[in-house]
Amino acid sequence: MSNRIDRINHLMTDAEHYTPHEMWQRRNNQQPVKRVASVAIGTLFQSEFIRTYVRTRLYVNKNFPEYTYLGAGYEQRAYRRGKEVLKILIMEFPGLSLEDTAEKLQCYSDTCRREIHKIWTPTQFEVAKLPVTGGSAVVARQPYRESRVSYYDMYELARDKSVSSREKRQFAHELEGLHELTGLYADIRGNHNVLYGAGGFIIVDTILIDGQRQDFRVSDNLTAAEDVQSKLEIIKAA
Image 1 (tube, rainbow, N blue to C red):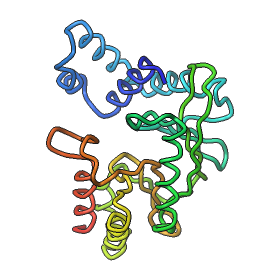
Image 2: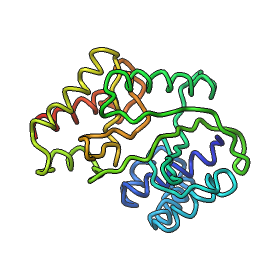
Image 3: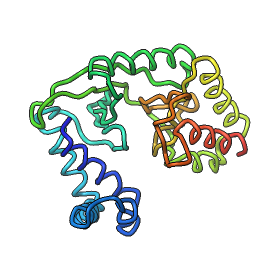
């Protein structure tokens, strides 16, 4: 996927989570002209209509014309067609080809399906052509999961009084058990990565975090794995 498209995606995702002032602060290493341009475009992308239009033009039209836009995060963009969800992955594994990335993610997902099958969404990874934007990308296909609630974040999950503390702790313990067995964490950090349906909690995010990986960081002082650990503590304390 081109660097230009990747930059546009990150600007749109920033626009969903940060004010113009915060976007300005996050780009303090950019040259002044690029910094002003980035924040100006990011401010434009704070319109949900514009974000949806651009994402649809970038990914769905002609590439996957039968799908409608669902939502986006830093690592992937999600679209739906009936009972199927298609996710186009933005993230990369340094040194791995798209084919190797798809194989690695499939191995991770199959491991989760085996260890935490009740809460894990089965996922099929493949490399797909993107005729409009050019090149190829790793895509993930999942069944669409019906739910009573889609949690914005783990703080909202912790506050959900309709779910017992016991069930929340059990959910957290299952994810801790996954890490103890495999070294992997399910990514519960993002918005709407966890749902609650008729059968209980459901994880729909496709990305898994290697607990030993130090370069996948939320900030200078916090790795993604440590961030997941902190979210699990919030759930257990609810």
